[in-house]
Amino acid sequence: MALIYEKKDKIATITLNRPEALNALDPETYDELTNAWIDVRDNPDVWVAIITGAGDKAFCVGADLKTFIPTRATGLDLSQIPAEDAVIATLRDINLWKPVIAAVNGYCLAGGMELLQGTDIRIAAEHASFAVAEVRWGLFPGGGSTVRLPRQIPYCRAMEILLTGDRISAQEAYQIGLVNKVVPLPELMPTAMKYAERICENGPLAVRAVKESVLRGLNLQPAYAIERLLSLMVFMTEDAKEGPRAFMEKRKPSFQGK
Image 1 (cartoon, rainbow, N blue to C red):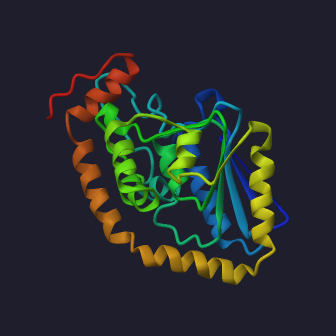
Image 2: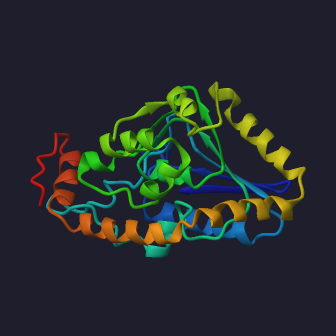
């Protein structure tokens, strides 16, 4: 089972369940995660959701490059993922006004970082680390990072993360406002649950209206359209083939700017 979806006392808990692959997103996981978010949106018995990863190493490291590279001669092939799944899984293009809490239990990289940016409250374990690493492999972070990250943390720090692809620690993430709290791993889920329970004490219609007002006020959709266009352009390049090949061959990419 690529994903565990549990509901209790108005709180849904979603656990990415591929710890052997650092909770990377393969086609099955994209599909199951999309279905989970749709249920959170539509189920009247769910008021708040928590998203986390199985194990103690990774929250999510993004798309499973080994899954999406069928041969060494090709680049990253996301054609196996329906377009709707690719955006809803990372909490884009879904009118989900219920609060989502992230419990980051380790590596939060690439698409995992993009998923994080779609959440509302974020708790990180002390050993967690964060990166939008796509540029290191000649790829484009098309799950919302170029739109959401500069709106969520200071511009220069967002650009540093986006343009270098370097990782930052949980403490750095806290200092720049990317996460709300950093806690020891055993306290991670209890802390996330306390936030969820506290929110559930409030009027659910008021809570959802607040989140809807905030997100609609940011006017993200025109920016997402630009991001989508640029993402498609990058994924059609030779560099976008070279990067994943280099990743698979465990070497430094040789980019040609083509």
